[in-house]
Amino acid sequence: MEGEDKLKLVNKALPLFLLLLLAFQSTALGATKLSPRDIVVNINGSFIKTDSNPYVEKGRVLVPIRTLSSLGLSYTWDTKSRTAIIMNKVKDEVKVTANQLIAYKNGKAIKLDVPAVNNNGRIMVPIRFITEAFEFSVTYEKNRVILFINSKDFKLDENLITSDDLNKARLAAISLPITFSFTPSAEAEKNEPTPFYSYSFPRGDASRYIYRTGRANTVVEIKDGIAKAVWQFQYGDKTPIIHLAGQQLTNTLEEMLDVSFEHSMSGSNTAMFYSNGYGRDEDHPFERFTYKTDMYGDIIQTIPKE
Picture 1: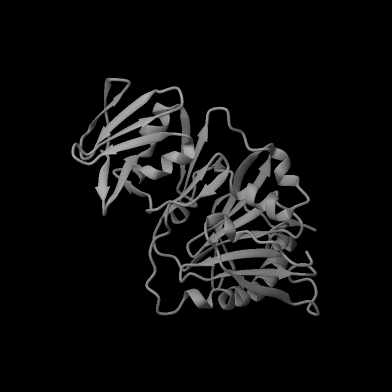
Picture 2 (picture 1 turned 135 degrees about the vertical axis):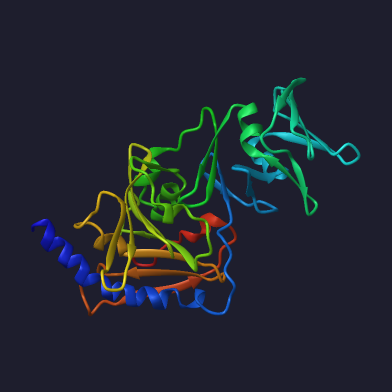
């Protein structure tokens, strides 16, 4: 089938999907006032909960100091001097003081771009400085608003992506930072209010997915342990597909909509599953169920009868 014919096939199928998508997102489009997506923290391949939301200040991400315990770091906080002393297992020491741009690593003064602050009773520290001082790597992915922190010897087990346990495989897939060989769409990287975010996968597969928000859709393929964005697009009204960035796909988009997991900014979560493949058999409509989540990674669920 030529590329033009394939595109016509996708365009023919997409209106049905868009109608279902509107129903799928209906709980998010009510009177609830929407906020930008919270920054999520992933440490060594696992999503963690934080007791206060990280935020960006002058281009630097600040996280609650309690997050450091998930990195194997310990800390003390002196209320009188408003100073935190952070240590690793071999007793390297970093000292930061609230609202001070000078920190100390093993007694050596280092200038910060932003200081530690007391934010509503939570001590927030500039995570890049702290983690790099202890030889962790940090990646802040604007596309999904996720902060990835890895120890220098960490590497996600590539076999997880092909695991027979699809729940575990898909969770591993979204735990990889997305890399780009093209300039990402500005729409995709805007952390402005959006009614939902979701992940869609092909049936029985964790090596490809589409990350969707109300602003843009990013198609991701995973190979050799690397999650690579290959295309970004939007859904339109008159034109079902609006190309944003990357290389437009025509022959795989449809099958990547078989399984979807969505988090509504109103707080609800919904999964949809096309038991006979998306848009291929009118006698087999999609199945849908709602569920609760405790943390970000819980968006991935086991799909009955997949």
